[in-house]
Every structure is written in structure tokens, then in C-alpha cells.
Image (cartoon, rainbow, N blue to C red; front, side):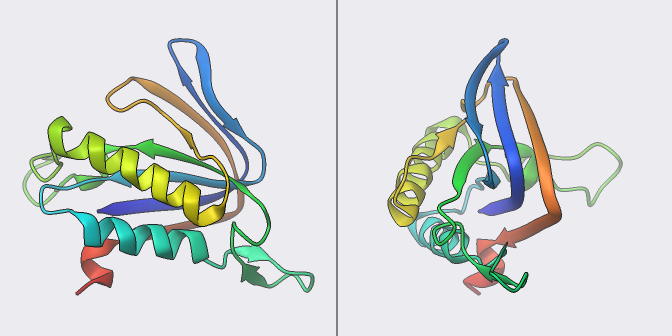
Length: 151
């Protein structure tokens, strides 16, 4: 399981011209789910994401989590995070989990992250053509892979 965590001043997800989720300061999280991913991967990334100290404290040092700054969160499913570019120039998405596995894990990831930060998490729509807009604050962008953290 992979996440790209972006600290944002604002972010939104639009589907078919309608805004599905919109936030102020907080995190935009892109989530990729692979064939081998399960409960341990999800728990690891929820825990790490909720506690990630990438917001400034009073001294301007990145020392506070999204939970501590009462920030908002949007989680967007993105199977392309699981792309392999080893051969040729066309990415292979064979490593991405299919709908039957990925949708329940995506939905549970959102539920658990919501519980971990103590507030509702905005979402996209799995499999939809989404337009994601953001103002990356910093910019601060962190990539995490559960397979590297759990190894």
C-alpha cells in the first residue's frame, strides 16, 4: 500500500462537475492499493499518516501532526501509484489490486483515518474520473510504502 501525503492550504475533488469534497488546511492523501496489501499495511499507514509531524509549531518547525492542528483530510484512491515502469515506456498496473479487494480496503482506510484524527475524512469516488485541485503548502509532499515500513 502506498500513500502520497501532501500538506495543503486547500484541496478539492470534483466528479462530473460537482465538488465531492473540499478542505482548507490539512492533508490531501493519494492512496494506492496492491494485490498483496491487507490489514497490517492499512494499520501501518493510517498510524503513520495521522501522526506524521509535517505542520509547523509556534517556532516554525515541522513538529505537529494533522490531528494536533485540527487539519482536514481528503483521501483519493489512485491505482496509478502501483505502476511499474521497469519495462518500456508504458507503465504496467498489474500490481494494483482489483475493485473487489481495493474498494473495501480504501473505505476501511478512510474510516480508520477518520477515527485516528477525530473528524470526518473527505473522499473521492473509487474508479471515477476525478479532478483533484490543491494548493500544496510548503511544498511538503511525503511518500510512504507500507512494504518498506513493515519490512
